[in-house]
Image 1: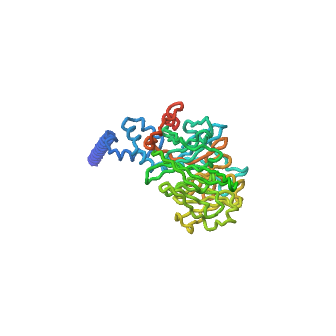
Image 2 (image 1 turned 180 degrees about the vertical axis):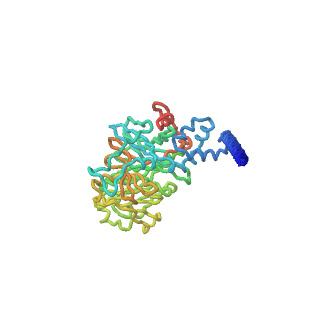
Image 3 (image 1 turned 90 degrees about the vertical axis):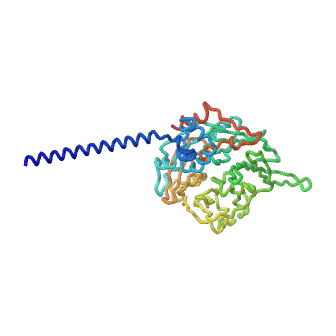
Length: 454
């Protein structure tokens, strides 16, 4: 019995030893594999794969990667990477361009927001609105992420954002100019040689900025009012003239007698290669207009079937935008109902359907002014807009709830959605009179952004 016990203990000892040897062997194999993996250099991958990997990173990480080595810097400053990144940018990052009014100077701030982070840190109301004429109080103010763009010599307005490029209009009586800039790269250029406003030729405070993928050209459209006097009939006539400027070839041409747009009537207006806006026409059929950037022709888009003259008269204000790749209109009817209609089949009048509606009187404290500035439809159908208390607010049609994200701070604010990109103006400015300059702040633009994104 004693002998059997010793034999059993000996067998156990041998088994434990074998187990320890197997475990040590497995650890050695793992360490060897890990060492081999660590010895593998990412630079050995094909360039297009490296570009694809880097393009999926957050904006802050990409900016850091530009400082890793010369090879990364070369890749991240190449036009191929800029195009690859642009296809993924709407998913990985988004930002808001804010213009705040401080006297005669224009200030532009860029706030980089993550949709998931914003929604997770926000407060919300369920089927009711907080009292006091505003949404629930936001927890934190929006943090400024980079240096400011200043214009000391007059007012500057935001025209639009396209492919990471921001278009600004500076309306000067002596010489109006457009500025195209990429805030991420710190590049900008000035487009002069525009007709200044006179008693005969007046700027209508509306411009458009878009990109034509078929011709690979960026275009600016400016609306002017041409006043003419007929001495024989002693009458004055006014016509709207559109000026189309094509970047790169320095081409500018005028189109007479075009639909006149309403100011502040559109957000995300670019769809199917055309810009869209609400007109000031009295004819209901001419309410929505589009401008094709390739053919440079104006066309009217049919409104919803219930938009007759009597119905339109009861609309307080109306905006046009894009929801899930479809054209949509947002409007307030009778100061009581906020409605969103979507055109499922572009150009087909019968395809308009009501997406959702908000009964303004149902929400305690909600007023028409709170919904006057929609800025973006998210992929899930939620609507972002600016509340009258200068807060970024979201409404979920599925849940019927409002959510107050961030406070934009005091002073009157103008906001648009901006998708950052690495498109360089040097690849666009091929004309002799177009010169790309770098923004000079406290330090270079990229350095400023990299240090403030931490």
